[in-house]
Image (cartoon, rainbow, N blue to C red; front, top):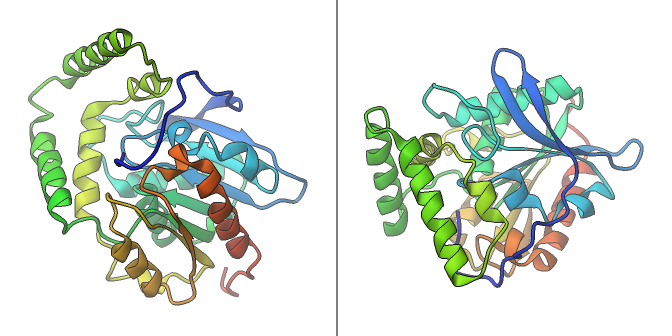
Length: 294
């Protein structure tokens, strides 16, 4: 998701850590970036938001996190270079993909850092694969995403569009849209490296992801979370309202709260403002003892 607060996006492609495709047995292939931290460091797995990719969401965070943690970041199914499937998009499947990746890399249990849509995926990962999760860091996210007029319109559009994706071939429309963006970009003279990331999306899956995000609601069970948890609240967020982010923190009685004076895209537009809160949140989670059962 993108908001209206922020500044200039970088035009030139950033220097990125090495990435590779990883086969998830019985599921498919996804794209992963993996950075080694100091010896014995805990591992954080970064989960990006809706319509983004790992790089769009976390490009400004990789190196700083890797100074203290082992870092793993993946593209979710249908997004960027993520897993491709003919099955309808489900947030639970994304959570299962992450569990399969952690198992394939042999890095668990891990601290899961979920941003926006990555927050529900992180919550579902804990619920479905508790042995994989050592802690949760939930950023600019909530336990439900419906209610505001903007969300109602957005997710109704996603729901209606998802209903016809089986009948309307979206690939030609996607190519045309990307081509139009390319022509506009050339005319304006302001290219942005992120257009290449977005051009890789399977837009049918991305639309379905919006529908599923609008249906997500963890309120009946979120208070059962029994691992160290931190909430990063984006105080100028016009996508996920602040009161809903704080409601999530109240439902997690022992969660630490780390506030950022930025909007929903602060991780990309103002990494200098976002990183201190993210690092503090990761520290607060990884330095706490795990529950006895884990």
